[in-house]
Amino acid sequence: MLVHPIGVGIGKWYYDRLLKSFADEYSDLQQSRLVFLSPDLLGSYTASSPISSDTGRELKKFPLLNITDWAEQLEQLMSEYEMRSCKEGHEINNWAIVANGGCAPIALKVAKSAKDKSAPFEKDLTNVVISSPPRLPFFLEGSDPKRVQRSYRTLSGIVGNLFWRYALRNKGKFIQTFSEHNLVGSPASLGNQWTPNCVSAARHLGGMSKYSTFAFLAGALQDGCEDSLNALKGTDVKIDFIRGTDRKQRRRPKSYFWKRKPSKKPAETESEVQQETVENYVQKNGNRGGTSLIGGRISLAWEDSEGYARELITLLTS
Image 1 (tube, one colour):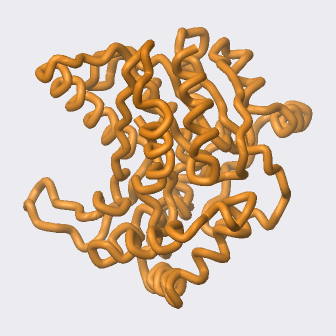
Image 2 (image 1 turned 30 degrees about the vertical axis):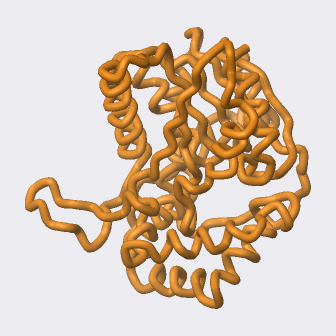
């Protein structure tokens, strides 16, 4: 299961290059048969036309989405695929879930549900792969829910609409500039399709995908993953990482709408958390797999799709 990032116009197309690399290089794998599911997350691209469960009518805007909403969507898709594959005679053996950066909490939530048997799918989830992982505090500290709600209301109004129009003007010039400065190691790696894809997806269905981006900017994914990590502690679920070799420190994108809860840990402990990596933390929990390095900075599956495909195959089949 491939979980795409959330942002202006980002959708399942984010993995197009990766899936092409798999098709070109690994279509004749002898040892195993790999199946990839790459859906649009709720509120993104083609999945941005919400219907009220009470009235059956199309909603004009999304409620504030959260980690559980996105995780349950993927769990249901995984369950449906299990049933279909069983009927078609190519039953799967196990699941792996792959996420990039800030969407790691979704993948870990699905893994937790699988481990505590609350997910609707039946097969074991054995691998979580996180590329471009944020720093450890992101995984352990949560944001203020009231602040997230206020921020989302603000973004869903005039402020957000003005931002959306600005982002899409001049054929997505802002998207191109922002991506070059913050999402990739080399601007050339964006190619000719990145910005047109973003603009096209962002305009799809009247721009309804803006609400998932607003939820992201408001901090809906900044809720911490400590519960999920604790649930996986000491289990046989392997957590692997893929990092980019371009570690240049440029302007880091900031949101003025979310802020993590103040830490209640002693100063010494807080300092240790700041210095510790998520890999070290996962290793202490007994879930550490491997860390692979490929070209790129943040958007690795797009920047270096061949390297990503190679390392993903290695992680999942080793």
